[in-house]
Amino acid sequence: MQLTGIPAKKRGNTFPVYMLRKSKAFACTKREESRFSPLGSPHRVMFRGAVVQPIKTPVYQIQQVREIEQRAREQLGLSSQTLMQRAGKAAFEFLLRRFPQAQKIAVFCGSGNNGGDGYVVAQLAHERGLQVTLWQVGNPEKMSPEKMSKEARVAFEACHAIPTYLFHEQANLNHPDLVIDAICGIGLKETLREEVVKAIATIHNLNVPIFSLDVPTGIEADTGRILGSAIHATATITFLGLKLGLVTASGLACAGELALNDLQVPASLFSQIEPAAEKLELSAFSSYLKPRFRDWHKGLSGHVLVVGGGKGYAGAARMAAVAALRIGAGLVSVATHPDHAMMMNTNCPEIMCHGVSSAKEIQPLVEKADVIILGPGLGQTEWAKTLWASICASELPLLLDADALNLLAQTNLYHNNWVLTPHPGEAARLLSSTVDEVQNDRLTALKTIQKRYGGVCVLKGAGSLILSPSSLPVVCTKGNPGMSSAGMGDILSGVIGGLMAQRIPLGDAAKLGVYLHAMAGDLAAKEGERGMLATDLYPYLRRLVNQL
Image (cartoon, rainbow, N blue to C red):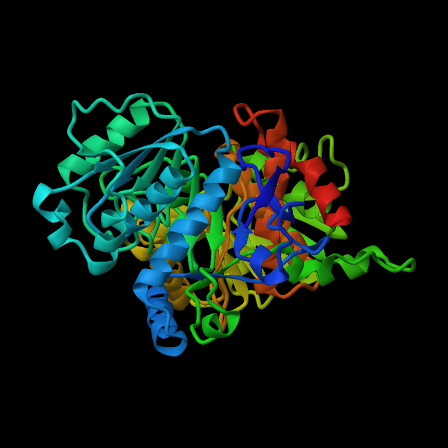
């Protein structure tokens, strides 16, 4: 099967995406075209001339992938050898499209089935006339054919005509055009051995593109954490199902351009296994972004009250307020420290500002609001604690961020009518743990916070995770490093709060808000990630919420 790759324009820190089209030399069926599912931005596959945007992309952990493999063997009669051959062929076809100039290829293989996939790719490349060298990485005893799995041994023995060497630190790799990483796969759970770490360092020092099979070596496929060291791939093709560790934490950075191939396993089999999460897709929420009727008025778009801006921190509350307006809220009020009330709406007179000193003074504002955002720039002073206690007693839908979360961590408060938006540091405080513990298993941290405190939880970071009651977690793969700057969380709070005010259910408002915020960040990053300000997102938020 020949497929021609058509790269989309690079957006910010996102990677090129490939729409798959039928080449003139080969007429692909709809099923054949669907085998390659590019997972960049946007997620599109060309089916007979029509662009299809999936509503939900399932995300799996390893136990579920193993179950899919087992059922494929039992129900479809697909052997492990057949699946390995299909994986190798899929990877090679992707290689030809993504790296068409590569003529000299170095394939690094480990002792497991991931190495077996690498052997299949090496043999196909050799048959194609490419110059291939095999490098075996690991304990020499485990690399002997008799120690390999049956599937890997068959694939290895087919490579008898390819030069094969045991990797060592002083190895001469002869300057390849491309490195294929097939050292460690989805079964990796422990810190990498020394010889693998040395191989990774050698590969990176080559300064050539790296193509990883299934998962970059060193990334734990369930969590995305780095197990000592990890390959930073140019592109990764993953097989059967999208792994959670490729779309959150460090795995998102290490995977590079990401593609999925289902190895010709029918959708009916996947439907038997509940995924661990779903990849966030805008199309699932398009009904909330329909044009408004001509007789619309501001009252129908909701009234947001932002409570924050402790002494010296007026900017955070102001950014959240403007973001809520830009995302479509009808009215936005700010309850802030009296020192800030006179200047809060400078250059944005649409914000209604109120200096408040006590719970009694804020109560009339609460009575007029539909949604409350609590926390941007709040602080943890006695003033802040007084307002926090008063707002948390309200029955209105709430969004808690920043110091509101830090104050929540000191209580056992549980609420089903709020959205919590912690970054890893705030999540660690909510869980009485450490940032490393949160980042090492972001999905478990997300579930624990939601169970302990109720409502909807958004765990921010690379591959933000969102969980609402009685639904699967979702992961957002958009966004870029330029968003790692002051105020981005305040903007997100305003976006989600503004959507909540527009009568969007809390869970969907959180998911849609995270997605729009990340997309706005990617658009702003077109002018460069370094030096990007949180307020640079404002015009893109307005554009997106109208155009999408």
